[in-house]
Length: 582
Ligand SMILES: Cc1cc2nc3c(=O)[nH]c(=O)nc-3n(C[C@H](O)[C@H](O)[C@H](O)COP(=O)(O)OP(=O)(O)OC[C@H]3O[C@@H](n4cnc5c(N)ncnc54)[C@H](O)[C@@H]3O)c2cc1C
Image 1: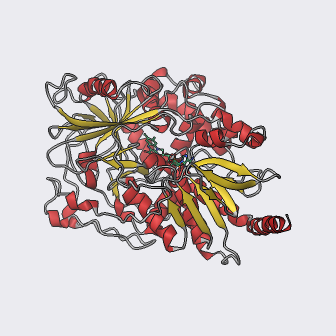
Image 2: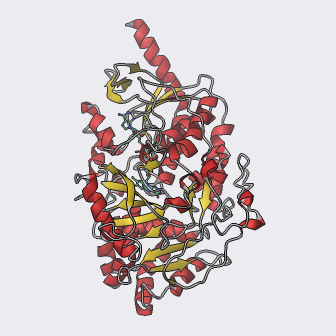
Image 3: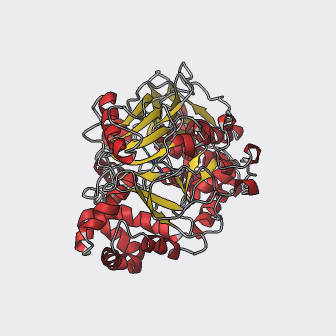
């Protein structure tokens, strides 16, 4: 991963540094936005563990705003209360799975589980294993936590991130994790709307507003029906008829669509091409950083299923600050409080094997050899493939990973010399050829809040052709696109708003590219090699390659290890006995 000008906030030098970074309080820089009556009423209180005590002062009521589906934007900066998601079936399932770790009988001999990779999947694996009484040792290659949610602080103290990240109501395992850690108050919930730029009307946006009073899926259907700028009535009707089999056929139908791209499926179902260009280019780029001619239709159907089945499923939240400190550190604190360990600067160089093909140890770049009872790989799939031992490569479970390849994506941050007006306190779909979603983080995120200057964070995708270009070329191209989104405020030559500074973060291999027929290649967390497990957003779980998928994969991995406990505890003793005899 190449990172422009990265200055790590968690930069701990030396090898294998054990983490002891404490959480800072980013809320300190936050000043109340203009539409709050009193700054002192901005009470984002720490919620109780597993409780959901969100304090929403009457003084924080959203300002009234002229309602129309299309038009210019106006900054209205306000957080919404945490939606009622804790009684959904998915949340209850997630909470139950979490509780099984805490309530399981304590192991007679806790397992030492060595985990490679401190992204959300590795952190989740370690957290739930620690909850179950085991001793995880989490080894992260870099000097920063979080993997694809990693972020760095620059010399001015401003943060820049690997990716613009949105937390949805339909992320039950993530939401449950926030509750368990007592950090529900760190999610800044936004208005329940999806807002799309209108390429043919520069500077204008069209909204899908989900009415609060109605249950799912009626609120979603109404949001779609009420929007007449993007799709005409005949287009909506044709698309709805095309979607009928998905609604009636359930999960089996959804899975069977993995063989088709979005574009192929739309044509097969008789949906007008304009439905794809108006809506699904933006959705495909947001979900997987590629266009609908490449993306598997299964991906869209899973997203629609998850987002529209629950009343608050598509409701979005921003983390209130940088993810390493605001999300990853509380997980690390939790792991360490239960006797687990997390080490940065600990890159696994080689998986060394016993004669029977099982893992003997992880060899680190530093030359250190790390042994455990159990081994987990929670790195991106591309790294796992590079480090697979030769005699595992032909095993079908590993062989099929060849089809899973990370997709390139670029995250752009531009600080401007002024506060942009044509923006909103929400995620925005740019519908521009080069860009995907974006947000004015000086508005949407407490820690990045600035009353005088905007910081746009933008996902640049598809990035295949751009990943090897220079940062300044990428910024020039971004500015040309921004001139269309902000015709009154931004010009490509900076004759209007001026760039104060920028950061470009390239991820040449991010989440796996969800092209058709990938689903059968996603591996279960339990590998055929005794004592070796996988965790990561690409492994088999019912959510897409996402933060939710990563956290769930970690739980499923921890669950598989617990289920195999007797075998694994015996394995350690067997190895010890063999070593003693020889
Ligand atoms: C630009 C962008 C925007 C995104 N937006 C969203 C969003 O809005 N919502 C959402 O849900 N998801 C989003 N995602 C996806 C989400 O970030 C990922 O799905 C998730 O974070 C993946 O977590 P992971 O733990 O599976 O993998 P990773 O985060 O990749 O973690 C793997 C870890 O392994 C480490 N590692 C690699 N090699 C080694 C080694 N040899 N030894 C030890 N450690 C090693 C890496 O450094 C890394 O820390 C986005 C991703 C990107 C890139």
